[in-house]
Image 1 (cartoon, helix red, strand yellow):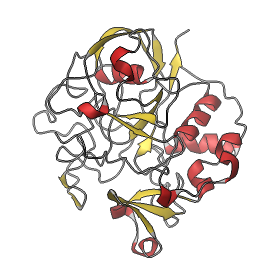
Image 2: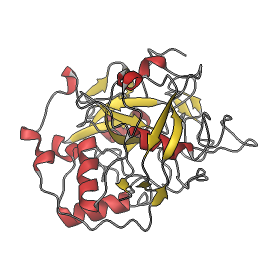
Image 3: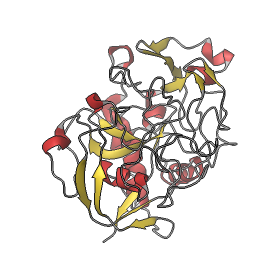
Image 4: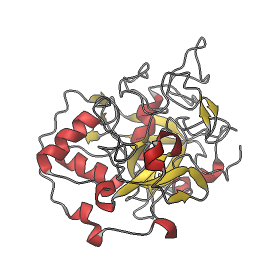
Length: 323
């Protein structure tokens, strides 16, 4: 694999082209009220030892996918699905929270989803990933631009969510983001060193098991899995632990700062990543991933983005301590 190929989620606000910021990081300054977290719908995982990472030839060594190492985790809770538009709407309506995309006034939208009218207003595209357009008015309520909505997507994952936004929701819900190690443990569903949450083959009996790109990226998606963009959060079969869509659909924020090397000599007992960094970890791939280009919908694959960045294929799921 060409490890120099950028991930399909590589659109970041941290570029000179998009370096217009709201004053004093306003999204972070909002005080979000506490919400009594309900763990009844969460999955309690026992923790224990597992083999994290991969030495698979399909991997991207430069991303820090390997080497394989034995990790030990404490028991923890995790949500079966990513947070949906309906759930995030309740949070926003109750607290008045405004996401960073709303405060910036724009977010990154995949070019094929932009209407002709909105396309006429787009001025900026990502140079190294020109399928990402900076669309004015795009946010979680308007995922493809001002002339779009979520009325028919309430059970889909919420998107255009920055890491900071995800943390605000977690604080309100009495939960947290999973560590990267917890995410991978949960995504593997009890299987050992398999490429996907269900095994080593992408399809089973010709049946699609996740929402990824089919066709020629980035110009033609045949959508033979049933979805060109996001799929409902409960789509496809869950893995062995009961988690849905840990491969494809939307990238998921983890709590860790990203490093391609920290894990090589880092702790093996409940690792939480480096103490600081420039970008946060993303896991799971998205509906834009394709083997010919990104191939990061494998359970060991990793990506990153700055904590204030948002795109139309980034969401999150929550975790919680078992204590």
